[in-house]
Image (cartoon, rainbow over all chains, first blue to last red):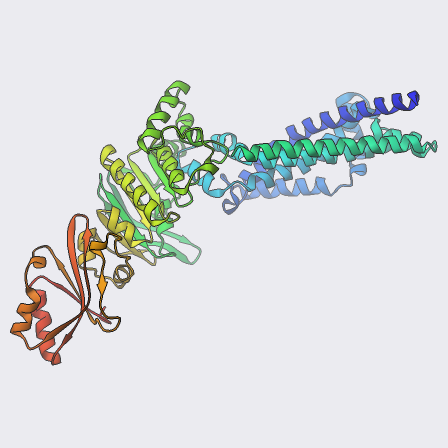
Length: 220
Length: 335
């Protein structure tokens, strides 16, 4: 029992580190791309500085990255992990492909959230003489905040799933534990424990995310 | 601040939304621009408020050409122009006072000064003490008041009202129009009101331009245009004009049928017994179907809808005589 507990505890910590870091990095990568996708889009869809060519190219790149099955993307990105963190195996190494895999997803989620901002409000901000940066920072992001929080919640949940998959290729964490112990060593108790912890993580993230988003809406 | 438009054009594909508009908008007044939907009002206001560039033509604020400003000058110019909208367009992420503070924040005003100015503005629009209210808790009229305070925060020279009262009930509309009128006088603003409601023009504007198919079909002082409308569009607007709710000024209709002629009396002709005089001179009878008095910007315009019964040649002579007395005669079906 105590061995099981130690195993699951260690794996949970690894998963949390992976999910937390990759959420952070995927936001750092995806947020600017998402904003860029939105503001360079057609004027009718809330684009404040329409740049059709840039928007088109960026959109395509994001779509290509999103079309890759995650497992393939991870294998392709191993060399990059080796350059950035010095190894291609283990929890730290997995953060790189996780972040990059989630970034285009984050970009699209941010884009969708910002596109929901009432175009009339953007027009008003423009009429008042806002610069592009002021519109992005003081209008678009605050107005889209509840939708952004929902999007980030979804991203975290997706990353919990991805990080479990990363276990299959030596990434560590709960997925890794479930495969090595639960599946390969026929330990249904470890399998079950891993699945339950993942389930609890997903549930907690969802509930907390919903709460934050709802509280923001209630204050409006 | 006076605005001049010279041969302004803006097309979207094959749709000529603004078609060769030349217009002089005098300063320190309330100027109405009326038109049905699709007449080009929205495009026109986007052009003169510098939100959009014309395909050709020129826009002047006083003597200064403003339609071709470089980007940073344009942004600075927009800060001296206020704008309010049909749907208020307030920031839902900010409460009332934070909304009003926005235009002050973007020009880099100190926090302390902002708080002081916001309090002043809340007071100006009659919302003192409601500053902390989330936008969704305000009524339509209160939202428009917040929007007005926000639009006036940086002491603009011009206030554009884009269908600003179209989403409000008649009573709230009147209170908002009164507020705008008062603020106009207090701040010597030029208010440009874009609307599809003749009531708004009647109650709030000194001048009016009537828009149709992207062009101006009629313009001038509201009192002149109301008394003597020249275009069919204007006549149509006037025919559908809702009577003022003040009972005294209602149009009273005795009979549903008839009423081929509309007689409009203004100024001195209101005091003269013109009809009975004409009746004595010519062999005609007046059968009055409806009548009333409307107040247009302090002047009274009497309106009678009637039939003139008699031999057609005599009726024609009677009409000429009526016109000679300074009465405006419109015949149904006549354009």
